[in-house]
Length: 481
Image (cartoon, rainbow, N blue to C red; front, side):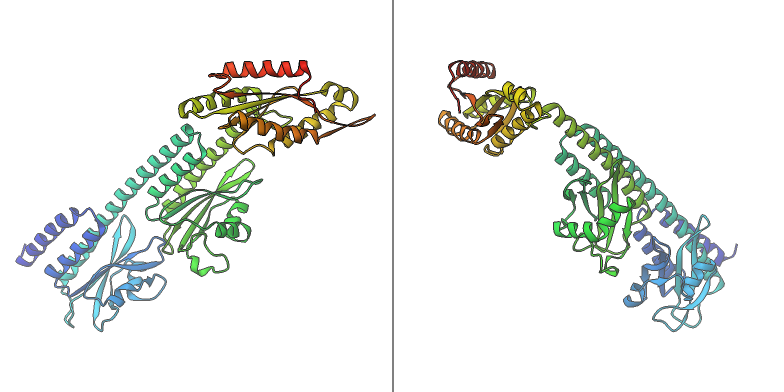
């Protein structure tokens, strides 16, 4: 082996060790430029890599090029020498951007795939000798192999993170029963996965209002934009088509503006259930063309888990509603009232707050059913429930206790307050008329009331006293309208 060959063999060995030690592609490319400058006599050098979609060459590292020449991406379809070298996988002599001398472009290939091209130039008309060209070719190949290995390692780490994300999402969906908490957790997990992205979970049930369930990132999409997008934009299109919709350049589609104010790229993935689309998982990046192929598959898998979670929450809520409410009046039933009474008793005892209870027993319901008809009796019960519900506070509880009896739980109300509420409800009941064949009659009822802590210190005592007072009111004829 002659002296020149021994020198290049030593350079290649040292280069292989240096390049192989790199854990970051940016550092690796800078090391390559350093080797080219010190050992191959390159006065100018640049690495152009294919972008994610494979249609552009982007300068990832350079030495000796003007910033404006290095910053402009090159279209692969152009006949520029750099693009030609990538398409043909054959080294080319070209006039590099911003230069007048011929430079060498060497394709960077690994595992039968082209990653990009290495541009090198001496800065003189003499150019490279055969040994330097061989060295450059070997360095380009070695760098491509290391870059490909890094890409595979990163892809493996990304897949692991994605699997871990999906596992955490599935576990949260299975163990969390509070909708707001679950939606916030799902959005936070997705925000961690789509680094630098804005994530929004938008719910749009077929028979309901649009809502922003949760979001993650530095920006929240304005509700007016979401509503507009559902009505005539991309959000509505994704919901109708029940298929993912990717907008790679939001600025190129002004007729359908993005949901986030600063979006360059937006990905809409519908949450599809048995009855249609339940909502949309929205992932947005500030830069255009920022969504990668792996992002699409991850977003689809995450949307499937989110759709299952939303559907299960709604089924659970419907089941709870059916088991806790009276089907005829849509008031709470006796069983659920007992649960709420226990909760209120615990709260009142802890914070030393009073509360009251009212119970009424409608008079003559049996006569109404037999004279006017069962359907009229049912409508009357519904009317009574509606009339009382509209006169109670939002945090008061109205329940159909049994048959023609209704009970009300009034938090933080003392005996004087209970009397005020009773008077208001009694007046409302008097205005309800029952149309008997002999003529209309005002509805009448018997009433009873208790308060905590004056009338008892546990729910059993209070409820027993309330029922006793109601029976006494019925027997003595008090509370008649």
